[in-house]
Structure formats: C-alpha cells, structure tokens
Image (tube, helix red, strand yellow):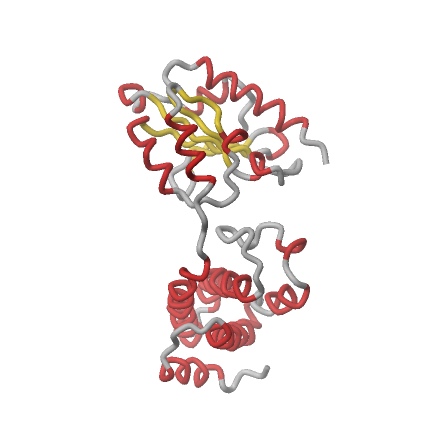
Amino acid sequence: MSLDRQIELDRKLRAAIQEDLRVTYALAYGSFTQGTADRFSDLEYWLFVRPETLAAFDVSGWLEAITPVHHLLVNEFGTPTAILPGLLRVEVHVASHDELAGVAAWPGEHVRPQRMLVKDQDGALAAILQTLSGKQLNPTAEAQQILDRTLNWLAFGLNVLARGEQVRALELLWWVRGGVLRLACLEAGQTEYWLSPARLAEQRLPPELLARYAHLTGELDKLEQAYAEAVRWTIELAGQLGLELNSELTAGLRGRIRTVPR
C-alpha cells in the first residue's frame, strides 16, 4: 500500500518544525518511524518548545497552516489530535523543552533514533534517543502486575455482570482482554510489540492464540461465556508463567462461573 500521502505530509511537518523558532527539540514516533506503517497509519510527533511560548502554542492553527484539518480534538490522554481528509490522523504533543529529559524514561521499544529525530538544537535529544534505543524491556518483570490488574478487572466485571449490568460488564471486559492478551503473548514468546500486543496481531500471533482470544469478545447475550473463558485462561496463564495467585481467589472466580458451560 502506498505511503505517498504520509511521506509528503511528514516532509511538510518536519519542514515547518525546522522553521518554527519556538520549537527547540522535536521527534516523530509510532509505526511510521518503525517501518511498519501502511496507508492507514497515523503520524505522531512530540514538539518541545520554549517555555514562554508554550501557553500560546495553537496546535490547530499550526496544523491548518500546513494541511487541511477536518476535525481537531484533545484525546483522552491530553494529546491534540487532528483528523485530516481521508481519515488520516495526526497527533501533536506539545511540551516545554524543560521536560525533554523525561523522554529518557520512555520504554525502549522500536526506537529508531535516525528516523525519529526531527529537530535538535544542541544534540541533547539525539543523545537521549540513542540511549533509549539500547534500553531493553523486561516483560517477565511486569507479568505479576499485569495478572494482578487482570484479576481486579475480572472481579469487577463479574460483580457487575451478576448485578445484571450487561453493558457495563461488556465495557469492563475490554480491560480483561487487554491483560489476558499480554499474558498470553508472554507465554507464547510473542513480545515484539509488548506495549501494544494487539498491533499486527493477525500477522504475528499463533492461530490457536487468536482463536482462543476470540472467545473473549462476547456479545451482550454471551458475556457469561466470555467471562468464563477469561477466568479459565487467566488461571491457566498464571500457572504456566509461575505467577502468584491466591487459592481462595481462584476458588472464588471458579465458583462464580461454575454454572457457565465451557
């Protein structure tokens, strides 16, 4: 699939960033810098600006001077996000350059310093990205925390479902699925996209894993079966990964789903 549109827009955005004296450091990130983008992929940037210009930096006006914008919003994570013609999305974080050092704390997954670097007034950003590229994720170290959080969402969802709130239980199942998928990827040795395990899942993950995951995507009238499978799989993964799981909690989860057919 052609990336001509993204390539041309990226060129324009990088040129605008270079010309903007308010911007002292800038980087691009996401699939476009990782070499995995297609014509549906987003463009994403971080701009670090002079502190005295931060409050007045108008992302909407800045983008509209470069490209037509159909819609601009601030997403759930506080990031200005634009929807362009053809549903192309562009995210533009803007922060004070005093916050640049915080980039060093980012996870080091798929960091490509040369592709990511857009503007660097004194080499500080290049040095940070180079260090970040050598930073190794440790999925195994996160496994217990992921299990614990998944158990929390399971208990929450099962209680809500028992109350008869199917719509809310379906919403909570999203959190359950995310935790189970990460644990399943770890158990299968598929941690290439640890921070976003659903990324290219159909191409990366074993068919049997995807088939089982499908059982967690229940409709409103099939939530009992979806939660039952989530409980079974979570307990199974905890054992396979050697994680701590309270036996009384295990019994409580199993007891709640004991009447649900496999």
